[in-house]
Length: 408
Image (cartoon, rainbow, N blue to C red; front, side, top):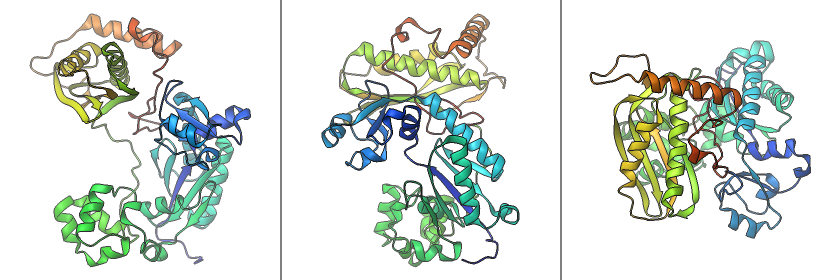
């Protein structure tokens, strides 16, 4: 191993079967047993599963009946998002305070650390990664895998090579060779659509990328295309995102019992999402006027982008938009609902020309938020939601421990 400081050193921390590991830690009787975490007791989809379950072929996204066919002794655990967020925040805070202030929280169970500037103080990148593993264990008592390289994409690829509790190092001067035979779709950010485009141009593994002019990708995808060209050669130029940018959208969705056709049930799920979204907008002093409302059917999404009469942080106008979409529903089975604010903006910003204030409603929402903040979410809620025990919270995909995105 070259003992000279690396010109750039990135560590990717990846928690192993994070939700399931927390369940096994908090409930010792689950240790060493196959566990699947679902979205509530009535959830039918595995959010994640323990390594004991994975040994039987169970995987994230698998339906529970199929998982139980593969693993008859599978133990179902309802998700506890608040607990997972609590543990994640403890981990991220410890890494920031004890390893590097340059941290990008990539998801609730992943973080990039730029340790380039830490090498004089903490040692070479491999030693820093080992220390980071110790910090994670001390903060949570949970194992994690580490990927170490000179760029974000290669570090993330390295982290998944040895799980659980692995540490994989791909020095920057070896990154291009290490990726040469790796399918391009194995890299984070290259989905099937981009992969198909690259395949049409003769690029199936990363080593093929050198033969494709960078301009081809730039013309099709712009700057992201240029980044992909470098990613495949182990030279991802993307810096860590150290701050949480203002959200371009903010939404909530729920997977429903498959093929739900009961209108009241669908309306309850939509109401739940509207209330959560409105409360989240208020929590961060935001309002929105344009919304995406969607029902996922077997054939695809029944959805629309609809506008409220004025920017709002109240659930009632959003619920009205849901009813507009429901008027187009013809009784097909519904599998998921989604309600997203497309243009969140500061609530104290310039009012629209025809905007109107609702001081009484604002005061009522403020009281409700204070009560729910003190005694628990939905302590005070529309009556229809009081018996929503089969619809627990989920952690937003863009979760961050600080700023706009901290939410369940």
